[in-house]
Length: 540
Ligand code: DQQ
Image 1 (tube, protein in one colour):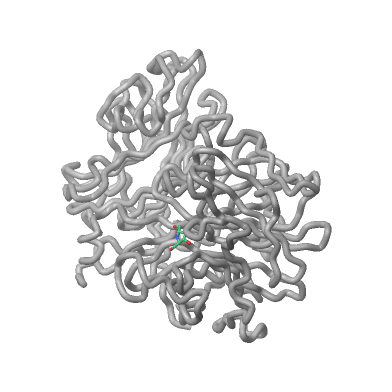
Image 2: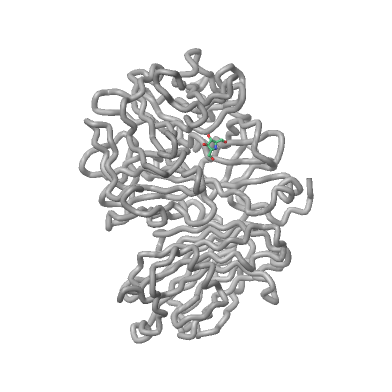
């Protein structure tokens, strides 16, 4: 494969080569973070899937170990697909994962560490009872739609529960299984939750979040201090959607405040409005937080992936909690990533005039972290363009891209900009007046990101629940060679984009703050840093 590698990341997780997808079974054990992930040891496209394994003490620097789980028995001989870890009584971790068996059916398998005193958990022993869950004629489970077991949680009856993603015709379902010993599992009559027309539910995740506060809690906690989150990765849409609601333990049902049925799918919250899929959380009991990991696949062509010899990265691990409104989640890069920051650039309050482009000097533009806050003057709010009818925000972002002016916006950042602006990826806000309210549109516009038109240059976007007259409008963007990972409204909405500039690479890339609207906007704060390289594949 090619030795010219301008798109390899400096601090977003990726192995030295080959294909990667879903993060699997993340956990912290004896002070060590473990990341397993779907990996093809033989090439840059999906196939031959094993659980690769890396460890870390800070979620930033990683050391690869040998694959933890790979095909070796009839119940997983055709692949070791996604799954989760659960810490059982006596601090004993267990992996549940989907095996593709001899008949190419999806079944669930169990594995334990060979040596629980090894903090690196290098070797895993598969249970002689495998598979521990399988499709049968009695349970009527579809053998090609039965995968991705969750982390288990304990009910008050002392039984473990896990979910398995599935579908029946076009109804997405989270099948519930219960067990006393984690080995013998009974399928419950009712799924924990289901929704018509949503298709296959991949990689479900189910966890409690505190009603008040940003700390995480143990996956088994269920009392009136918490609400519950059900996340599903919709195969038909390739996005991770979440619902907030209550877990009624006696009935083993999840009751969402607002579900898929009540609203159109465009209104259901996503973890990320860009490239982000098959994510999974774990409770980090040492730091009392819930951490979210997710996969960002390529936007390049398969030919280009094969040429560069790799495909897929992971987004920066994010702390995740319930916003104080109770209406949505908030995500923020784990604080440890900030130790990579160097060369701090700090701007005093500045007016960003209509049509103005200000270069952010002093940082390595291809590997940076930028935080910027904007303020719209109260007297200018009347300049906002009126939005006549509700439009899908992603469509709005592509119709009204970076070059389309309005009264208020677009304003934001240009990342991976080439000197003559032949290439740039822009992340911006645009303010509308909609039904007498101010509506903030948050976009990541990839349409000009590369002169190589074989890349997917789709724009992404969402509306952002920020009151521009009373709250600051903030943007944080993590820039990393082929990644533009953005957090709007202090983590209320995230957009991850993958871009492959041909000119704006390495030291030929620049960052700008821009305002292409007609009205001036105030930059109330700007901090930018170069990011040091992380040890993504360091030695022990
Ligand atoms: N990836 C795995 C499956 C899962 C899908 C296979 C989601 O277990 O459903 O690599 O990306």
